[in-house]
Image (tube, rainbow, N blue to C red; front, side, top):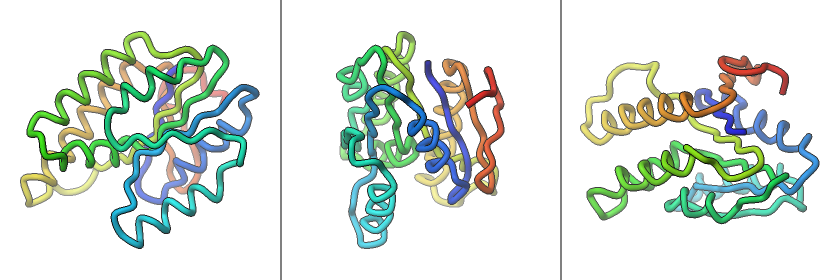
Length: 175
């Protein structure tokens, strides 16, 4: 089952996804998309790492997310991807001009028939503010919105998290 968990910065979406994963009885694989490019990001990564149980598997995938997910096909497994907007940023900043389009197509193709088990996709909702002035920032907001719409259409369940409070937007609302 595919689930999308959206929320703003510091909304509690990652902690909510982790709570869902804690209840899972099978193998849990945490797919991290962040890159530790500066001290502040290293601290964020360490905070997330410290919250995770030691028995969870970790797969780092700043790019090639579809390839990573295709290799994690466990019938009773749970895959938690945190977060899609960092993955989008990595792809947009990649040297190849077409990196994002090809990354997105591969992910959407994979999710037409997702790997077995449960997949939790965490992402930042960024489209509720003003239109950014810079072209790259505008493209980021546009691409994140398109990504979220495409994933929500494929997901069995979509969550919106605000102030640590999850709301079910689509699907059966029991967590």
